[in-house]
Length: 358
Image (cartoon, rainbow, N blue to C red; front, side):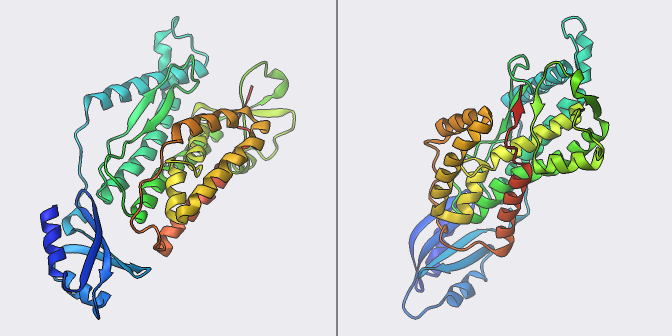
């Protein structure tokens, strides 16, 4: 639907509805206004139902919110052309994560170049988790007619950054006017990534080995989330205080997936958790954001990781404010609220007080 078609629809209801503000996400149009004289919401609905478009009507605070879109857009999923930069970054990230996985396995790449293949379990698992996370965002952006790019994967030298990648992201290229769309697009990534990370962690823990702590000379000790403690108890119920688990690369990738999910669900800025918090709590999100930053201060005494992440998030997100959502004051449906609560539960399950220790 283009603007001309949208204006024609508004003209059909102009005797009973006065638009105050309009906006669009590509073919998804929104009109905010008020009813005229004695007319009701049902009068508007009786006119719109005879059109070839799908629509929804909500009333809040004496204003009427009318959303209209092409019916065909509800079922079509656009398959985009993959650009060269996407391919280059994707292939580079595969290489750097393969290299990272091989180094974790003790391979001396310069002496044994073919040993890079030992990094396959780690690389495939991590790329699958990151890719699923970002395609969750992308799919729901398409569903709500929000223009978005395919995922950009970010390679990183494993000699400087252990896991060989800085992660991945998609770029939203059009405004999001609908809080339902904002919630679903924001929540889809963490939920999708979590669904892949959990079985990866389970499979990896099954393949991991128990070692005596006295045999550990140096390395990184990973912190435990509630979920990690629970799964460890399931697979290793007789683990002694003098023992530890040497994670299989698949388990380590799963652990990284849960950590990424937890960090993304922080209710700050335009992180995924920020989108979810804004859709669920509206303007109260500003207070939640400040409370989150305040909480990072005591957490920094437990682990310096939080100090680093807090500073990084502050500088990256300090100017990243949400554009206004037209229906921000309208309550979410019960099903959408459940999505938000699921994100909160996932955050709690994945939360790690002290992620890394040397």
